[in-house]
Length: 148
Image (cartoon, rainbow, N blue to C red; front, side, top):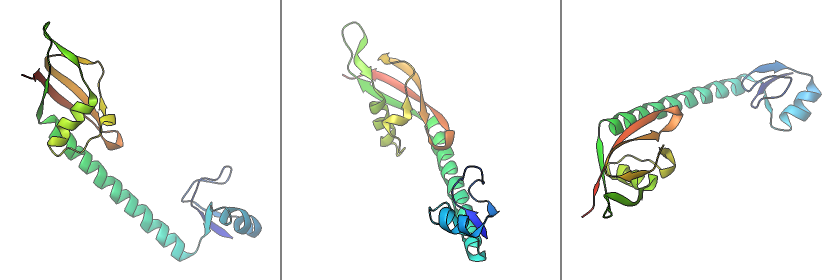
C-alpha cells in the first residue's frame, strides 16, 4: 500500500514523501494515528496544491516584512520623555513606548518584537532593532527628546 506521509515518522520518512508500506501498518498505525493518508491521485494533487499555497503565503509574508523594513528604516521616530534635573531621563524609554510610536505610523509591531540592547536613559538618537517575521530585522532610528 502506498501512503503519503503528512507528518514526519521516525525510521520511515519525512512529511510529503510517498512510501510503500505493508497494509496493516499503513491502515492501522500510519493512517489510524494521523501520520499519513492513502496515496490516491486526489490526495497527492490536494497535497501539492496545499504546499503551493503555503509557499505563496510565505512569499507574501516575506514581501510584507521587507516593505515594513523599508518603511521603518526610511523614517525617523520621535519619543518625548520626562527629564530630571541632571539631564537624564526619569525612568527609561521602554520597548512598549517604541512599539506605540511605530504603531502611530501604521507599522504593526508588538513590544516583544522591539529589541533594546541597552536601556535608553538619556536624550539623543538611538538605533533600535525591530524583529519582523521570517528572520527579517529592521533598524529604527529613535530620537528621544525632552517632554516639556
